[in-house]
Length: 223
Image (cartoon, rainbow, N blue to C red; front, side, top):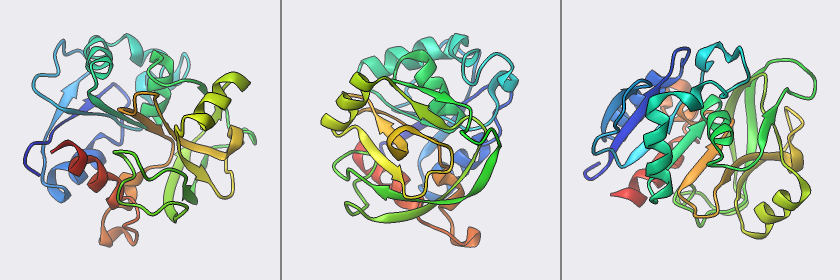
């Protein structure tokens, strides 16, 4: 779509970067390019996506090493100026590590990797990320993670609830996340992170298009 210039950040170990690129480039018809983690500029991009995967092998802690990549200085600056940034799965973990989103992602409560389709409830459809959903609508989106257990302290949780920053909740919690949280936005409403993978539910050939409206919401809000 005209006006949207997306950048998909690629870290060593990213494995959902091409999935995101495919949806943005070939389904949403946006100007999309990859941004290698060692880049010192994001150019004229007005939408930045941090994809899922295992950045730097998750050897230190999920997302902990990725935040030191040179490109993240630009992403953080971009976000603080109001630029739209999305982190999915490992990207959500990176956003929490950088402080662009509050909280942390811990090991799943059952200590097992979870890979299945889950049902999410839309808790806020007055955001640039959820505008094409109905409030309280239930959608089916795949998850694939070992550390998707969202946690924050009680004061932060009260702020998330009070400021309508929780956009998605699990209907049946697969990982033990506090308050069934599946996706949150920052206070300024331009940074969003979620553990489920909407890019894996955006084409009819995949048998599920519930994630398509997530991307549609974002690109329509930017153009």
